[in-house]
Length: 492
Image (cartoon, rainbow, N blue to C red):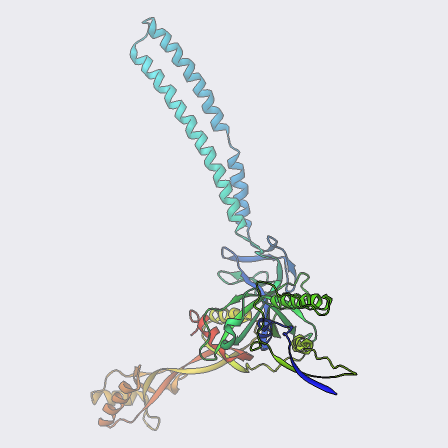
């Protein structure tokens, strides 16, 4: 005989923890970049005398990286040091002051006896004061020479280049013997900690919090989990792509993780609240099991007891010989959440190739390249030669048989002015009727010559130009707009 009845079963997992477990942030593309990138340059222009570091060398903060030619500054230091030790003038004035003071006392004694005039007394007092101020002047000159020595030492220090961080030399731009003015000598990067840059869809903006933990899977070790912590959440999103940027900090004490590579980021929502509530519910279950049968375990006063309408109704079939017990299983859901980083979804952000440029200055190209490097992108440089029109020439047609001198004399008789015979190496020695900035004026000049029966050609004047480009093989469209905004000050 089977009995069918309904019982109330309280859910083991709280509704708040279940709702929190449903928050799943997508895995997105990211890049691992240095936390700091510094282009080191000298404080003053000069000729590079010695470099003490090469590419990939580890450096410490305050380490000497390079020296400019400083023979003149070293000579100034030695000269200032000798001048700063010159104290003979002070000693001489001290002797003079003692003598004048003694002489002044003698004169005062003689004046009290009316043996000398008041003028002699005043003259002695004047000499004493003059000697005193000469001594002060000598002491001030000695102090000035000390300061000149400090200045010479400071000028010598400006010829030296020191590291401003603990890191690695990423690139050396100049070599020994080259002259530098305002160009960087080498680039330093700090690899501990590393920064992880990523973009997420705007729909997840409120779900990402500072200090949230993230799992990073680098392209060189896709099965190795690296831990990072959210540092910065961009307060302004990108409307074109509907994304916002985040930056995470990742410790790298031994510089084992290289910078400048792609990665996949999976942010992990905090599970602290879930663990507390699960532990609490487990404790309540154990207390209920330990209670004697036939008695009910009272609910805590702070909690509201479940009513029939609020409790889930579980239908249980029971037989006399073998009872069948039902249990609420939540472990598979938790296991599914734990296994998410092992089966990462395909990121929704698409990558494309983009060329930044053209640039007409080397300094502009280096500035934009620095921005790309700070974002973790690698680029290749491309130089393209082209020509641009800088004006127009009105030249005599080449089908005339007469000599150029005869033609110019004939054209002057017709009232034509402003003619010039060009050299043979340029435009084959043709007669020029003028140079013009725009085609309108050149065409007007040609029309006036046609009315006089003179055949002419409008020839554009061209000049060579080299366009500089930076090509990035894979970059998100949202990052292109962001980098262009950052480089507006230098972008052509």
